[in-house]
Image (tube, rainbow, N blue to C red; front, side, top):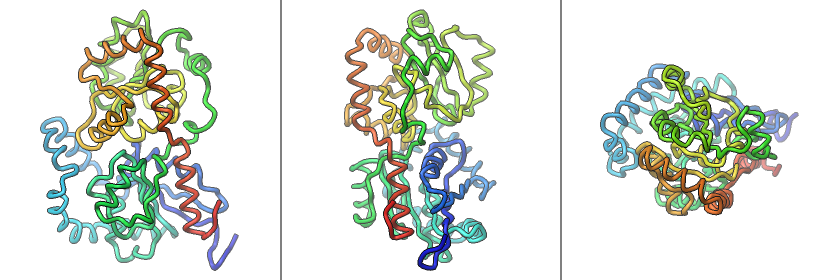
Length: 377
């Protein structure tokens, strides 16, 4: 297929930090909405492009969080720190971006989509990529200081406040589109009802069901949260999604749990677990929140990380979308309150559903196609 000198399908790089991660989930969501006759998705894992840099950043991030979380919270979105980092952007990034630029040129990509700020920065700092259409997808409910404000063809934001942050930092208003955070088709299509989902997962059909999630890495004190719910296990059942935290799964198997509390290893299709749940509890990553909204489930904030998750928590509280459990004991009390008050639970679910943008990936993909081909789809 050819049009106006272009050969279709056009190769579009979808660049994310690592997998599993929310950035990867968002990239996959967009890929699902690329019509194969028009766009060919090329998934690019930065941790594979920079195999030494990725693990170093991950280790540093987790060490800072565990030992001095206040430092990370300060650095994450501090204008002075961002200004001080400008030298890094102007000297190190152009050099570092050469490897990514060479890879994209080798793959013959026509455009690039970044679901993470660092890859956006790399793309905008390489002169060889200056003419490459580049789209930035913000996957948290805030737009922190490290998103580039120049060299981006279009930004896709979750909501108005994040769009305003980008405008304040200097991004052109006409390039900012509020679409929501991309979620995969399994979260945006026809969903199974609770009874069907529970039957498919082997869960009790009539018990109040809590889904505990620590994101793709299975972070947060999920073991303590599950232990706090154990005294209620005769009246409820809980599923703990451990992501790729195999240590947590082994720990649970070693110590033993109640039969109504299950620890699940990484699953590539989590929507059915959300469908089975009465309440989702977990770390407020942007994609986790968007998925919960798309499924119309109430959400309780538990053990958020400093930085983007704290800001996502602030978004949820500002819109009265979620309550925070500051400890395992507070979580148990919150769950008991929801169990005793179905009307409050239903109200919380409706509030999340009302803020949902389940077709964010479809809408962002449509705009990308329009800009690359000059036609609407």
